[in-house]
Amino acid sequence: MKIVPKPKPTWSEKLRDSKGLPKVEPIADKMSQKWGTGTLVIPAPIEVDEFMRKVPKGKLTTINDIRVALAKKHHATIGCPMTTGIFAWVAAHAAEEQRQKGEKNITPYWRTLKTGGLVNEKYPGGVEAQTTLLESEGHALVQKGKKVFVRDFEKALATI
Image (cartoon, rainbow, N blue to C red; front, side, top):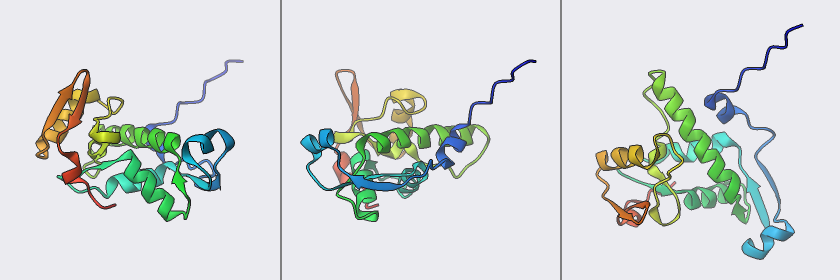
């Protein structure tokens, strides 16, 4: 009998798979050393995508801003830094997958930066692709060592 491997889920399927999330739980012992006490929201991937979609052309957000918005939405102390970053990455790849299929209304993932205005090198196409997309929307970028930042990104932050 031949065993047929299960097909790998697409990025869009990963985005829609909530895996029982979101959930709010107490901040664990190890995390409390950095984040203090209170509660932590572990968002569903689609929630991160929804916040990323709210950023209009010419504006920006950061993963930290999304974490704050998620915490507020769920009445938690903080949004989980690890899962929020991972789910932004999933949303970016799902958007690129959709673009390749000809869809027009995709998540503008390039508008979601890392802390300090840093361009996310793990998004589709890497820093080069993000730079092109951000410059096409009027943002100036600056390279510091191997990292690329949006200059004066704070002036372009959107309210999400």
